[in-house]
Length: 267
DNA sequence: CATTATGTTCTTGG
DNA sequence: CCCAAGAACATAAT
Image (tube, rainbow, N blue to C red):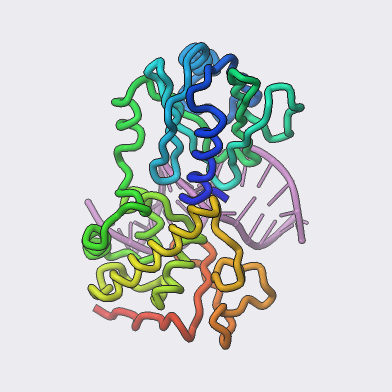
């Protein structure tokens, strides 16, 4: 699940269950999700302190505490943050359990463990870890977006998915946005006109507004994303069957009627 | 057994 | 340096 909207949902889970609460116990059930920190150091940095207002940056969730340390959570492809009281029996994929005051609790649950938890000792540590990201997709202005597209020769799809260029978008969202903007995913980013960049920005803003509200990418039939699982997948606007390709290393769906492929460059 | 999966990072080669 | 492609990571479903 986890792209920007999903992480936004996890932020709400942490805000409503964790903000202001004391961290009574941190139980690492599978240290395979810890990145650059031991279970012991994580416990020591967190236990006894309280969670502050959580923040999302791109696909990262930043959980600061009043002790100065912050947990940085990345959910990979299969991670989630779920609220459950400490007494609830563990799920098979619960990797880290946070028992909080007031009988609350949250758990980092993740099947594949492709990413996981980091610890930042301070705000400077948070910056060090996340400062390499581009602007957040949910807040970027049209001019900034146009500028970052203009200076890259790679395909639009790969630039929009590149977290160091723009933070928050993943495979599903980028396909959705490009379909709405009527642009083929293989268009070189630096070939996009001002108007085409504006269409990307408009589509991105709408897609993110709606999916952030839902806390996920909706599978509605009016969304391209809702058609990925079909056999055969069809364009939500009707007519054509969707093409399925490998672009920027990821399975990509696009409509041959709505999204004309670029002329192959020859120079 | 092969293929696929909403992510990131590293390597290799052009 | 830029970029694409492939592999790797770990696990489950089809």
